[in-house]
Image (cartoon, rainbow over all chains, first blue to last red; front, side, top):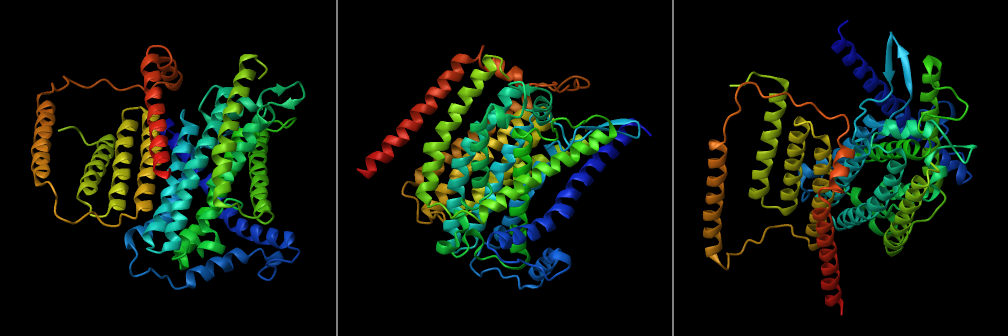
Length: 349
Length: 172
């Protein structure tokens, strides 16, 4: 086999693997997981009729969505109304491409690095895509020609712009520590080393403040409770997706879960050591497979955190949201930058 | 006529996207659609940067222009609820004529420059992408171009303070 062909096959294999896991294995189960966790927290069984433990509930939900009538309001901007949910879907799917989901595995005589695209602008690519995703929400709100939807769209753009700033400043500190924008470098830096002699060199230990800021900002970026003001049902009916039904609504639903997966992957990669775990080997075939398992286990932990918070906390008011973003998170993320700078300067990390 | 290659195909598609949507931005009647056309144009330009082996510039193009500045444009348009362009007759018709003349002059200068540019002789040297250009950019920014960098940041600070002052005055 020529080197070009085998490289192409390797790339194709990784693409099929990672998007297969995200779309086919994670996505349907997340719908089920969310509803079961909601049941658990609210002290009720949750969906338990379709299949064992209600595992096939997601398929029933999706089928229901496809059977529903697809309505586009007469005065809506048809083109943009149709495009909006997909504008939201694409960035969160594309983010997955630069996330290192494992170390390296030797396979068929090749050393395969477990990331689809190891680009030198990794983290900037992620932020660029995240900043484009907001168009989906804004356009859905605007194109529906409905005042509640418009309010939702305006709210979401204000919210995302406010929190992107603190999120970016928090992430810059992790790059300072690793000395590269490359996500594989960020993970390798965390995997090899200890902090204070006994902790792994994960960024969540060296910069706990930055980690908390990033997680809070990620909640705001994904429009999840307690930051789901763009779709606050008590005031805005359903916010930006008020005028969506059938499979177009399904696309929004899917985008929300994909965002959840992408954000959880980013938290794992930037702050919790990615595919690494203390005392577990990550070299060789077994180690490589183990590192993939570690990565997805960590990601699932964060997805659980997202769901746990959603069914526990009430929603913020809009003025509180702005206060937290600009008056608390932004100064604190600058403080975190200073802290990390001091650590790097003193060669503690 | 250059040989048909993958690069040429991508370049053609990106050019059509960039020019087509730039035209759409000007001709479009709805302001929101104009903003979106400009977003697509910026994506076309980002593809050019990738082809020139400058992914950093490409990502900044998307991040800063498409992701930040145009979202703010959209935000303002939606906040003011500008659904239609102002349709009433121009108060100053001379502006339109002057604009036409200025556009013709600019187009003439640009196409003249493009036509008179010397064609590269022989095969253009292949661009080798740098392994990691970002540390180099950072180093240049904080050494050779420090003055320009600081001047720019001061300019942005002045703009921010000015905007704050203007909005404050209206509330009082």
